[in-house]
Image (cartoon, rainbow, N blue to C red; front, side):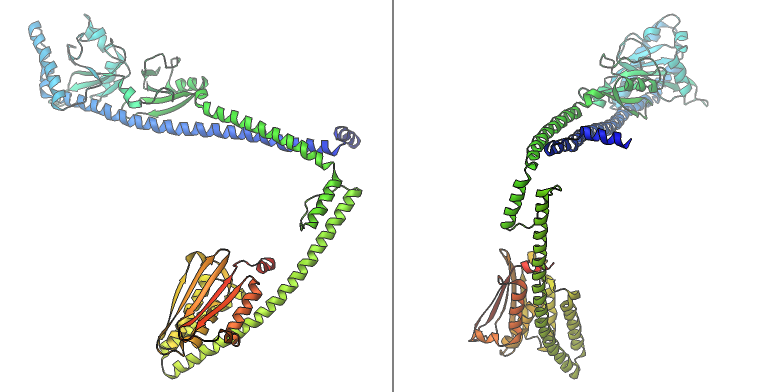
Length: 588
């Protein structure tokens, strides 16, 4: 078995390296590309379908609410007509046999119907006609002249009483009942509401007659207002079996078999329609939106076509590139030559790999020599940085005791003079100052923390010297988050106080500026103290000298430390350094 597998593998194994690489690229690039195209098309299709379902459901809900407003207007119209005392009186006296009196009553009742409508300003845009039937099924109509329509025959009463709509209206006991067709027949595109008149003057609410309101189905055209390219809206009377399509009554509606609303929607889905439903509260009918899935998915089909074309183009480009690159793999000697030339130019990272042959052995040996040489160089640099770090820590240690000595001396004298509140404030400032100085052992500190250190230091000196000195800090907020070497600005402020402001008569101020200057951070510490004639004497004190040496050790030769001074006018010290020196990056 194992021999058979090896035989098949060797049969389909390409002998040339270029052919193997080319076949591998085909297997790695083409299947993922076409899989990506299929997944993109499927996601676009599902997203479009879900968005369409959500949008059309919301549209149906809104349309139902608009329809409720229009239909409730009809319900209110029916209620006002039923509550009309004059019309009820006419119905109570409906046993008139004289044709002349019957004609007069017809005209009178119709006029009263018109007055009820006019006096209450009802919206009758979609009211096709109104008909009142008394107990003897005599008909009084407003808006139509054929009276009882298809029932206007000698046995009119028996014909009407045998109808389903009449029995439903009687069972409703005065509630408005909606029917998806014209109960009196005749004009197409009309549906009816039927309401039973009841005599409120009797104890049992004796029936007096029927009120039939015929409405134009075009009402739903203004309610839906969204058919056409976006699909078709239907109003379906789902309370009857089979369900009846009330709107629209055109050839645009698919031909559906008789059945329940569920059977109707199932058939639509089988025919390739996407169906959304919403039940109307007033009529208890079902509002439906349908759209052919093929029409809806035109956009996603375009996405699928575009994705397939792009995937094919990328696949073609990948094949061409693979063919070109595979040719270069057959020339390992040229690659080895290139690697050596790159090393001679300064490159130390090589991603090339070699087979286990003579050229490969030479290449791997060369790479190992380069790696060992790089490690030796890194160790040398690390040793030099460790030496600089030791020198930096020694210089920094000279600064901290000097600051501590001066501050403790001030707290001592404050306590001797019983200024305990000031001594407590000074001790707190000293504590916060040393917390920032320690900085959890890190050599660098954010600029805003270094400025906090200065503020705590100035608190100490303000208490100590009775508020003689003030400090203005003007630092660009954009550099507040930069890291800088800690305890650089504070010694300069301390030097300004003890050598510039303290010998001065009267008050003095220190101004600190900070901003970004190209790739450098620029800080200036300036005082209006006594100044000096010879700037060179600043090199004799260890405070400024230590700051200068620490800057040079940490930030390298690109940093600068410049002191300018004028006797009687003050001193200005300018620091300039790169916030991310090469030494720090290598050490990290």
